[in-house]
Amino acid sequence: MADYIVRAQAAGKQVRALAATTAGLVEKARVIHRTTPVATAALGRLLTAGAMMGCTLKEENNLLTLQVTGDGPLGMLLVTADAKGNVKGYVKNPDAAVPPKAPGKLNVGGAVGRGALRVIKDLGLKEPYSGQVELKNGEIAEDLAYYFAVSEQVPSAVALGVLTGAGGSVLQAGGFIIQPLPGCEEQAVAKLEEAIAGLEGITGLLAAGLLPEQILERVLDGFDLEILERTAACYHCNCSREKIEQVVLSLGGREIEAMIADKEPVEIHCHFCNKKYVLSVADLQRLLSEA
Image 1 (cartoon, one colour):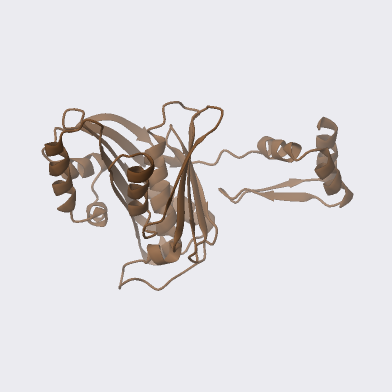
Image 2: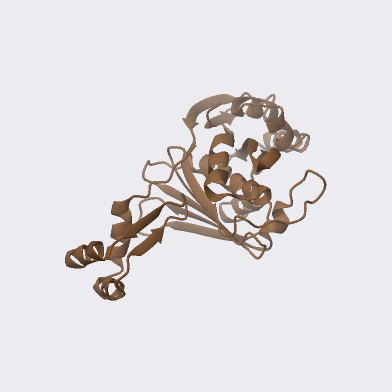
């Protein structure tokens, strides 16, 4: 089944809702980065959140970045997403592992540790919007809910889950973000809080194979749900040789001259897709002439 994101509204346009199924793109990230199960879960949750949040961007060229920097063995996690459902990311230490919380329950919070969550939105203005909060527990979903409440003053219910099977492959992944909009009636907010508190948890919904629409129907039962848009989601890295050369050009003539003086090819590695680009001495000389 292809990954996709559903954008919806409920309670007479008083509530914004997003839900996604992302098993395919999380599995692709796992294969690219060769992540351990706990690293797969942490990165998969952040990728899922990024994909959903990216769909709220207004323009196609807008970009969203989520950065989690913790003192746990995973180190930093970074995800970028656009408004078209494209998302990519990486974890600094993909081979990190920690003991499980309980049999069959990965300890994502322990693998991430204490630190900060940063959200950057490049909206095409002079300066990107940036907000940062401390990590509440490193479990990603709760940290994002805290960010929404503190940095954007929007109370939010965020649920993210990744289920792995034998060999660490991804069986199911997805999540939802529910937000009462400004002016939402207190009665609707209270009803929403009660409905979310009564849920069995996102992993149970994913294990049951529920689609994003069905997840929202379960979460927002009785809230007059209206589906607005469905967007395909995929793991997509847009790196290219041309972009790599532009990065080298941005270093300036002196830096390129120093590379040429080494008389060795320069290898540049893309963190998002693990592709390697090799620039020969002749390539560097050409770039120097352009610089």
